[in-house]
Length: 218
Length: 179
Image 1: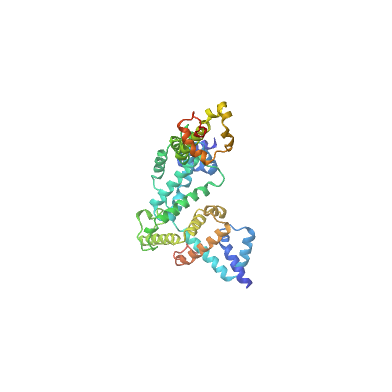
Image 2 (image 1 turned 135 degrees about the horizontal axis):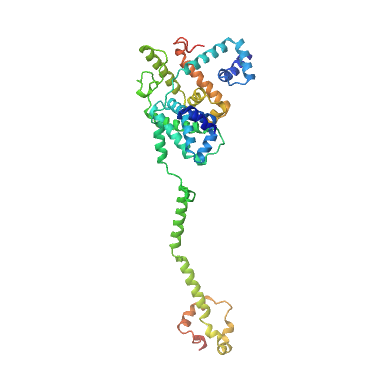
């Protein structure tokens, strides 16, 4: 009942979706999906489509492929709705599917992969979509793009498991137990994995530290 | 030596400390070490700066048609029907069909094999052997007057078996020795 009140108050479908998705837990939503409520599936879709696409984009490096894989993840969640049981967190289950799909995709396309290099031109859909709020000169904008691309490619150069661990830890802000479940390893092994990954990134990204005033340092 | 060991221990806890996920005991331990170890303090600063660099990675938004494409794919999914529970799993269905085909095939096979026919023929021959002299044996006059029968062994000898074809010609006639 409170949900419908929020809907009336804001009168905006997307806002009411967000509030509804926040009020109900993922497990509750998924159990509703299991019971045949497609609207709950839309709430999960709205909540996780951006994190999922970003995670997959950082894994497979092509946005179109990332979107295809994200769709496949949601499709598999939908197909498995009847067998769903809340034995684990919904995000653990969903990102485990996403990780497996991403790793399979990376392995399938490995023969087409070239060496990681910042000299490779950006594809149109790889341009950062969020422009800075303050006005930037064109050369500053290009430097910013190159910087982002360098970071992305440095992460992609990590070994598969380390890459997944960093993406889930740094960008999805998952706790160690959840990441360990997704990667099917112990928490202790995960901590070692993360330490090795961040140690590599610390060295590789050192040239970027302090390049821009007010960012990087502090 | 103790300092080196301590640095190794702290380095393992450094990430959890920097992302504020370490428990209070570990946190206090790391802070106490960083206050006294310049190398670890510098390393922690570098990690902190590296995390700042990683924060600069922009996010991408899904394309506008993302939801529509997904809903179209979901719409193509086969809907579950009320009798869906009766439809077996494909592998189970295949196994059942295979079992059915095997049982039909084995059922159509001729029941008697060559060995079976031979066994049946041998049984019939034995039955015939058992009854062919029955007329003679049931004739009390023949048996009572035929002294040579007292010398016949309990089980037929090979010689008797060779003599059988002679009797086969006319089972009702007494054996040639009687003449």
